[in-house]
Length: 276
Image (cartoon, rainbow, N blue to C red; front, top):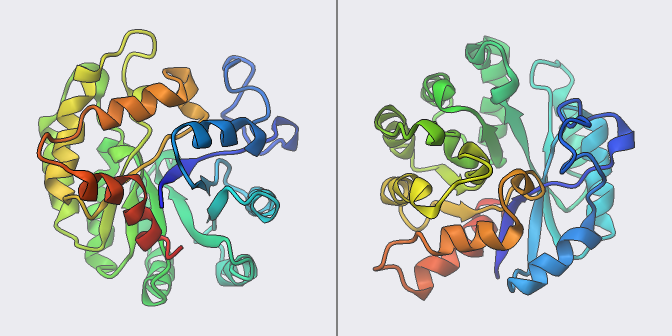
């Protein structure tokens, strides 16, 4: 099974997406399954995982409703407010839908990433870790330290780092990011999505060579069984079309990788992680 493990759908008029403004004309329109499905078919992908793009339960309800009517949607990663004492009731409602596969924590949007270490937040994650719920972690490179401290408190968390933790590709800085990623990779239940990379480079003049060191580092640290392909479509359109995203990753893999490793990257690992 070939899977795009990270993409989004949205309808602008819903009003959930404060970060999508008319100043981003490429993104400031609706994106729905009819837009993506031809691209999935063109790249022999069996389906995709929708990931939330707004911090509201209403948006999770919206993407779950899309999943109900789109066979190409294999799973949904929603949103939960773990600072809300009623988060588990919301989770219980979401999981009644068989396509709900987990939730995402938007650490990137927190002014203080260390808020995830507050006792109530940690206790909530411990509860989901006990239930082996998959959790996406959206963070920037300068927030990895907070996540490492979180994993000390919740060592059994089944997590995946989105967008390789957004390293400073434009500045070609890699050493500090590598040290932090090495520490993350020591947690055997943490995976990493090779997604969202093109938008970290120069949008209008990136090259494959900009990303190869980061891709190879992730693969070296996490191995072939804990990495996933994700397009981050349609956000990727700020810098690259779908084919360019696929080709960038496929063309940057280690020469020693064969069909087995590629199958894990392009679907097998996502299938296991999200329990599809």
